[in-house]
Image (cartoon, rainbow, N blue to C red; front, side, top):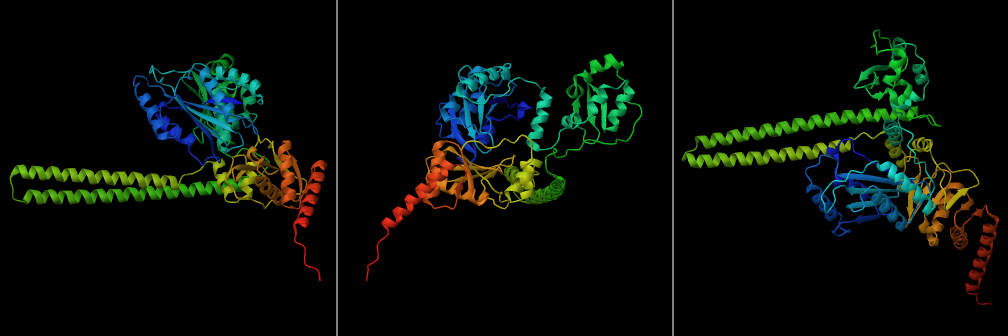
Length: 529
């Protein structure tokens, strides 16, 4: 179990309402599990009222310029599914340890990925004192509580000792989220850090940087490496502590800017992380689509701007003609003044409508031509049935085999089998539903959610899917209750299946024989001649 504070880089962009909408939206059971509201007076079933109450509390403190919302994420290992009561206790103890136990919060469990995770949106403004609570060294406090919770509830232990600097963590998050290689990762996966550490003078260091498409320069009190192709920068000390400005100047003398320029032999470009499969053709398709979407967006935006300008020009022309008619009309000055005012009000109202419609159309065009990141594009292609994209997702590092109540085959996997998909994770796990139960397919096995243990119909459907996926020789893993239900479902539905476990196979044959005997006994006998 890992607990993290997802901090906004710019406090002005933080919105409690937007965060609450993100963590609670989605189909119940497919994306969102249990939703809890804590320390709020509003009806928990009316999320709009809860959010309005939190926003009203935040608005009571206008002195602070800090972020008023704390976004807590608690992620569990693959296969771990704590109960709602356990999740509630975990949430309460983590919030209490950082001083936010009495604060208003909304939490939601997400079940649409390989790892069950809990999002908690917390109002940092105390509901009574109306003061802001800024947790100090929150990670260290939550790490100690996580260790205690793991031991208490028998959860798999994670490493809670920070071994990377914030820049490295952000780069790792970017690579995991997008599937593209970061500048830090690109440099560290090469032999460049060792060569830079071995440089004997500033000229050699600058030459090595330029060969790799980098520029070493001072910034603030330190030194950075800047990619010449993308403009992305990274602190030199993040690459290696031996490359910090202080250590380099102690070894090479005062910093000397580069004098000579040379063409790079290699340079950084955001590319997919190397995996077991070749994604060059897929990435070429991805870039073509991104370019096409960018071109389409530019054309749409240009057309919308021209349309708005034309409508505004027409409005101004009509307003001028109206004012001229008022000017030429007979009447006292007071009447004309009132007519001029009415014309102005009508013109402003129409102008506001034009701008509002333009903003709506522009947002719709933006969403229609949005360019997904690499991992999301692979996911979209896989949802459309692209086997190559699904294989690319499943080739990503860090995949953990599914555990628990599982079904797998002893023979060849049918590559063309694709169920009715509800979702696909960025690790290539297919998620689909059978009634209230969820079934996951990681390419090697099917995992059935706990809801199936007492539902023989769900077990029968999951078994049919496994037969279609892996053939009629099936190995079943999980609880004794699940294994028994699978065997009974196979016998009652007379499925053509053989179980790898001898005891399960004997039980299946025994139940099948009993079922056949009952059918014979219940069959009406024909009248003899």
